[in-house]
Image (cartoon, rainbow, N blue to C red; front, side):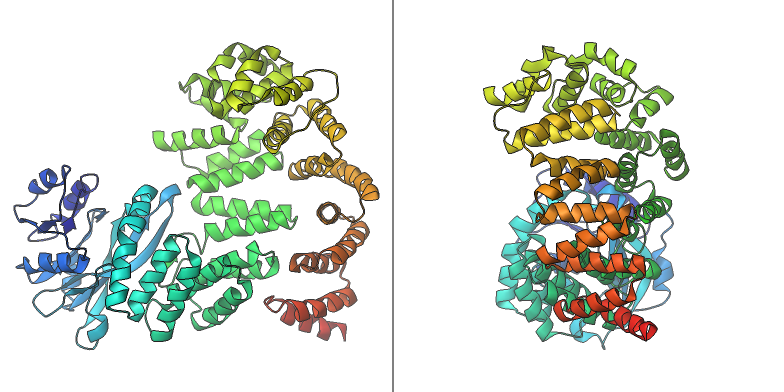
Length: 627
């Protein structure tokens, strides 16, 4: 091992490895914390090494100290789980062994990469490269024999994003620049591209990825290179080029789930939902496999992508089904549970149904599991927060109990929180203070609201007008506008519909342009009929407003008003020439089984949007059927 300031992780690593090896060699490159105290508990074979900005040099120095027949290399933030037996690998008598390394990330996710970590000593194997150091196997592959190990190394370094940022900016870039300058190989250019990619400098990343690919099209890392190149191209506004690369690459590497997943993400971000749908279904079919594997790309993450896409295309039953599929696979992942619960609020799913889903797919086995559930319910202001606090008799911070009562949908219980309003003293809860004050028209907290929201005299005048039977006057800036529209959502969440209607009317009377935002909120929480009625009035006054027409068409299609949807979508095409407008129309004609219209718009899409892969085969199929 080479180490520096690794007291946070080192003990777990050495504890997991000490019974698997004959000797432990630690090379320290300048620790100033308790790293060496921990190391001395496990070995006396400790060496100091002056850091020369070269990981390979330090690794090779460590290897030189090894006396055993084989060398195992680990980082301090890695460990083996119980039951690993490296002797089973060594019975195969290979020169080197490639390990799967399971990288743990936040939100209970992980991804796997591979690296040689166990190899025969004294046969000329050594490390190369200042950064992204690797054994000299690539250049001498025919000389050495290798195999994939049956064991997996666990890596927790990706759990701390701050450490990653520090490594990117303070270490990777200067060392990679030096390495590329001295040795501009395909591998080094690839890693230079990855460095810029990790820093979100996608333009430079594209340049280095392209140079690397031109020098080494047969390298094992090509699937990852092409995937990252395509993503970087997309981030620099080159959608067609990005898709073109992935269409070709997925044909060459059909088993690379992550590549297909990123292709789906790029399609979805640009409104190419039919192509995205095909990609994510293929990911689920493949499962998590390939040379680069991010956990969930072939399962629950693909389900969540489909859920989001179906929601955007008004296929709510499918959206719900995909979220349940994700829960079945990974219900204990915080972001999966949060995604489901957030959607449950939008569709106004009953508390009993939500409890049933949680109890079926979320395991409450530990205090940490319960804490995660409480954190999610609190962050969403979900009505079930009060239920679980009571069910498990949880004693926690007073403001959490207050929030639970506010969003319980019980008016009497809400009223008791007026006395506890001082519990909500921080900025995080000030929107909740405003909600509670508005529900009971309590003006006593105006000073608290003004201070926490940093509102001026003009803004406070408007806030006070909310509590009076008078019109709102004066201009509303963007910040205050967000506060008021969030208040509208909160009123719907606690089922104070009369108060929502009162506030919405005040906002519309103040500025008729607010109709669209109010209707977006109504649409989000499935009050479709009311939104349609309001939008129709707006349409008569502003018949050429693309965003309004798009929403009106979506609502009509969602509620099976197909003739009305056709009217608005046709109108939309005259105002919006984007791909998304065309796909909306195709979906409508598909719902109507209007083959002639499908043929017409399909032909137009093939001429205008070359990156839409689904159009040609569907068009050909309908052409045969039509004939």
